[in-house]
Structure formats: C-alpha cells, structure tokens
Length: 164
Image (cartoon, rainbow, N blue to C red; front, top):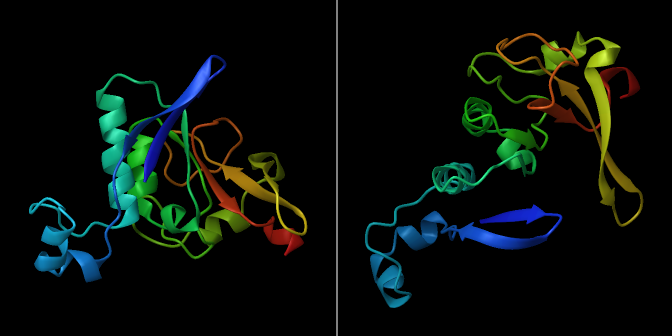
C-alpha cells in the first residue's frame, strides 16, 4: 500500500505499509525470519489504507482524493472514513455494497438517482476499450440523498442502471 503526493512541481511517495496475508501473520517463525515486527497483526487492505491516509493527514499533507478499486469501494468503513476526513474516494463499490451507515445496499439508491447526479469519468485505456465508470454523486451531510452538488464522494458503477 502506497501513498503518493503529486503536484505540478513533481511527485513523490510519502508513505507505505506492507500488506501481509493471514498465512504470514499466523506464522510467527516466518515473520521473524522476514524481520516483520512482532506487533504486526493481520489487517485488511482497506484497514491498512485507513492507517496510511490517517498518517498522511496527521503529517499535515493535503489529501484531495484517493484512488481505490472495488475491494476498497465495497468496504463501507473505508468509504465512511474517507467521507469523515473530507477525502474524495474515486473507486467503485460493487452495486450490492452496503451503504456508508452499514445498513442496506446502495443499488436501490442508485436506481432512483436523477440523471443530473451522474458523471462519467475515465480511468484510462484498457486492453480493449477505454475504462470508464459512471459516478452517482451524493450530497454531503445526507447519507441517503443522491445529487450532483458535491465532488467529495460518489458511488462508482460500471454503467447507469438504465444502460445495463
């Protein structure tokens, strides 16, 4: 897991933390041989990302947004952490992901979102086609409202429900 800072003047890696699967953290001898600290316990990738983002924020570095894949987007705790720290999370949860409050799925919300709540974003070229995602934007302060009034949070899906 890496945190990078980029600006017009340059870019640099500013933090990192190694993900260790349970198969490693469960074998102390293996960890000792690899010089992994004894206090290092298993953590999911979204848990590690929260630690790295928190350290970056604590260091006083501005964090405008983070890029994440579906595994992070599916973790409502990670999405909620980003929202609470005013960090835009550009990564799509699966359509069946739970909402930020942990109750209910997001697909009913997206299904009722007005057309103006959607914005298409490109993630660059893929092997065959451009990789684009449609983001359904949600207003701050409203856990259930979907509008086009914010850039700070969004639910990314592969296509609009009416185009599926």
